[in-house]
Image (cartoon, rainbow, N blue to C red; front, side, top):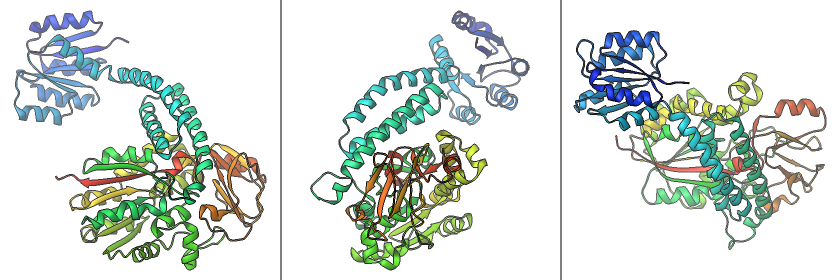
Length: 518
């Protein structure tokens, strides 16, 4: 389709060589020498770009710009002026111009501005497609040669980056290729976990990642001990790609000092992974030391009612005499209360906030048809997360906190994965109901399809009975009972779940930030 450009300048005849140059490049050119007529052309024609002189008699360039934006807000306008006065530039930029050129302009400057503002999306799409095709082979090689947890961090970072890049292109073919590569990566990562996870607890000499119970001890307490006040924000279910989606928002008030990834323990469920974070202990040790604070899967009591107590006990064990504050915000009311008291709260050495919205969102998507439609795929799910954060009381809190001299840490207890493939499992009434892991005495399953831990104590996991064992789903699998199988599968397929083994669930963001001085 031919691109139509409107050029508005009271000395348009002088610009005739530029007009001919662009016509020779294949552009359809409309020219006018005043703002009033330009507005009529904009109203009555399909214009792709406007070149607008700032200094014109009658209706000035800035006045014409304002009226063009009223008629067609999305129409890109390039301001051209002889003046380099800062206030004129500020007004033009404030009116959302697409570009700003200083006279005399050269043909190549004009051409570059057109490419940037008219052809940008196609050029970006072509370059992104080409780059990913080149990178596909590199990522495939990395997947095949991965031997350490850091290797998998590198692979996951690349996949998240390309997921964001290709998501903007809306290319189903490329999206399918990337999905295939993510599945391949998760399949190999599952083998890595199966071969290495238990060994992390058997020896202090082998290379192993930072895991949930070591988070405060290795990554938070050193900052406080060096004299910094720390705001520790745990957003339940926050994946690394969701962090990357909200990072541009946060970066307006906070500067990222360190972006790392740690490994969530299995089960990647709040009951296990988050309690391990706050206790500084593996679940088995929590259950042995503080049996009154551990609740097994089959019990009706809430599984995360003792986080504050567990953190208190960790601080006592390690001799940390910090002044600290803990709050869990999962409602607008509680969030607003925290925001209103933020200045006072942040006077503590350590402020811990647990925020459950992302977890609530993932469960709502499972249970509500409307949410399934709104978050129909990964890109939509990320978009909703970003929109929520931008308008949330949590973001209001963080903007307020940025005015205080504190260190901000953003992390999570685990991520989620969109499940697709049902795996049949038979269990008794006492078997846990989670779709990504099962804990029970009489589990019947295909051992080739799951990661089994017959002796939970090897993974430092408690068991309610002597014969209890764990199984975990890989990749995008979920565990379904044979009874009423088709209904069960239809209900849970394509929902976001956690508890199992995947890059999305186990590789958790840990972000350290400092406020930007305003």
